[in-house]
Structures are given as C-alpha cells and as structure tokens.
Image 1: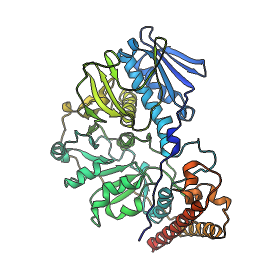
Image 2: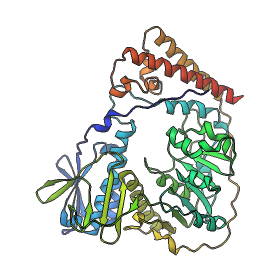
Image 3: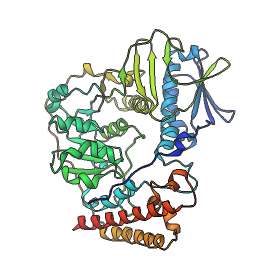
Image 4: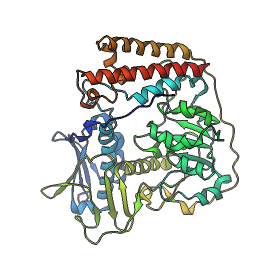
Length: 475
C-alpha cells in the first residue's frame, strides 16, 4: 500500500505584503504611471495596450510584495480605470498572492522545502518517463482545426459539446475532465496543470482500471504515476529531471490559472478557431442598489489617500463582487479573475499578430470585456474533424540509476536521523521534503524539535518505499 501524506497551512499567507511598486492611473488626464519606492519609473498615455503591457513590463520576481493601484473614484468609474483594477488584481495574484500561498515563497530564508507529495511524484513519475513525450512535439500538429476547450464553470454545456463533438478537437481542462468523463464524453486531450493530489484524485479517482481513449497532457510534478495506465498517451508540459536531454520550451502558463496553460496548448498545436465553453470564472449576480463606489462597483478593500482610492494585494481566493455598467455583474475570486485577464492579454496579442479566432461561451463574459474574444454564440462550425495521429519520439534514460540514487539518499538521511543527527542534505531541496508537515516547516525554524525528527523519519521511510515501488514499476 502506498504511504499517504498530509499538508499544513503556510504561515506566510498571513504576512501582509508592503508593495514597493505603485500604479497611478488618471483617466481624466489620460495617463498611466509606475513608481518604485517613490521614484517614477515611467509615465505613458493611458490605453488598453499600455495597461495590458504592464504584465510583461515588470519582472514577476520584482513584484513579490505586490503592486498597489492609486486611482480616483471618478477614474475607476471609467472603462480604462476599471480595466486597470482588473490588471492590478491579476498581477498581484500571479506575482505576490499565489507565491505566498503556495509555499514556494522566497520569504522562506532557512528551510527551502518541497512538499512530500511533490517529491513522491518526482520519484514515482520517473519510472514512466521513457514512455512520456514533451508536449512541444505537438506543435502545429492540429494546424487549422477548430478546438473546444472545456472548463468547469457553470456554463459548461454538455448538450452543446455533444452536438459539436464531431466538428472539433475537444480538450478538457482541470476539473472539467471529470465532468465530461462522467457524462460519457471522452475528450481528445485532457490538460491538468494542478500538482495537488486531491485535484488528480478528484478528476481520475473514479476511473479505477478503466482505460479511456484520451491523451493526457500534464504538469510533470503531478500524480502521473497513479493514472498513467488510464490514458492512451501521456505528454509532459515541461522538462523536469536534470537527466532529460529532450529540451523544449515550456508552454506559457500562470499559476494558479488552468485556462492559461489550456490556451497556450491550443495555440501550440495550431488550433483555429478556439472556442471556450465553461470559462465563467465566477457567477452572474444582480447589481446592488447601493455600493461604496459609484458606477463601477467592487467589494475589494481599499484605503483613501486624498482623492485617491488605494487598492493593494488581498488574500488568496478572495471573494470579489465586480460590476461595471451593463457589461460586468459577477461574483468571482481573484485567482479566477487572474486567468480571465491573462487570457484577454494573450488574445489581444495573438489576434493582432495571427488573426486567430477566439470565442467564449460563458454567462459572465469576463474574458470578453475589453477583448477581441468574440461571443461564442456567433461561432458556426464548418464540418467534421478527423484527428491526426500524434507524433512521438523515443528516450532511453537510465531510470534505474536515478531511482537507486534517490533510494540511497533517503536511506542515508534515515540512518542519520535514527542516530540523532540531522545531515545538511536534509536541510536542502529536494531532500528537505522529509520535514514536510512538521512544525519546523510550518514555522520556518532552523532547529527541529523531537516531534520534527520523528516526522522526518516517517517521511524518509515513506520516500524509500516509493523509490522501491518505482523500481518495481520499471520491471
């Protein structure tokens, strides 16, 4: 039986970031300015293009403490002012809020930690890697073919997908995979960006030993080893191991947005048009009679500085209510909104550069606001699609050598811990995973207590067992 693991909350969630970067938007003057520590870095005319260009203009690692938006209530009530708020929420989620939540934060000064589930997947996935290809070999393999990308929003219309099944390539992304599979609809491709164990078990745990006629494209840090045999083919989204020689570019994605990776895949494979179904990123709601802000409304917290409203980073999965005229009336979360905003930015670029057609069948229409993405009701399929066979290549990595090295490393750590000594190896990634779930990891402490040592021994033993199971999988 495979050992099970637990996870503790990340205390860094609760550290309030103090943004050093400030975005100043004045819709009346038509200007957008960026300050850093009180010094103005740039001032440009306010436009949709300059707002969206912010995402690629400031390196993400510089925004670990986030970005604050300074804007008057009058400017916020303008279309470009409201777009600036949406852009600020996205940039804070990607660069500040999610890194703090996920536990990969550079704020950890002592214990650079892999969670034990991640290291487990490193070990167990290795035994399958000679049968997994990099997704980049699918480049332009579906050139000119229409694709439906199914996402798990309220507008995921099974009847529509059944009607269009023969007219398009079908990709299910994230939790939409389970929704389709339970309806007896088998996607051509299933894309899983999430690495968390519960997400994989949610989507595929009910399959048992059933093999389905679908190709899995996945984050290689996910639980591929548990569900490899359920799929016709498996592709990795990027290179993982130091021994890999099949180096290709990583597909573009942002955490924690599944729609970002799904869209990048559709573009990589050359699909055109691309139709999103279920990309609501929230639910529609009635506009309230009263609110704290005129015309453009939000429940997002802000401070007042003179005539300006100041919006700063919020907590992860913050519930948001957003309203703008007759175009937006939605309750959502900041992580969902980040995906919708990113999609708009990339659609703006790709439509201008290549003319690709992108459609959205959702009730909220968040991705259509200030965007070239068209309403999905206007999409007309052109005929039956025949799916070509996916290309493949062979690798012959010495996986036994890698797994034996992993096994011996954790055997050494376990022997050291049994003797009452913590080797330096156990305090560095990836081996620091043995302290996953301990108070040492929880508090970022440099010194383990007795309970930490016992927990580390249990984890080391579990990883040795996983290495043995992976060796058995090799045959």
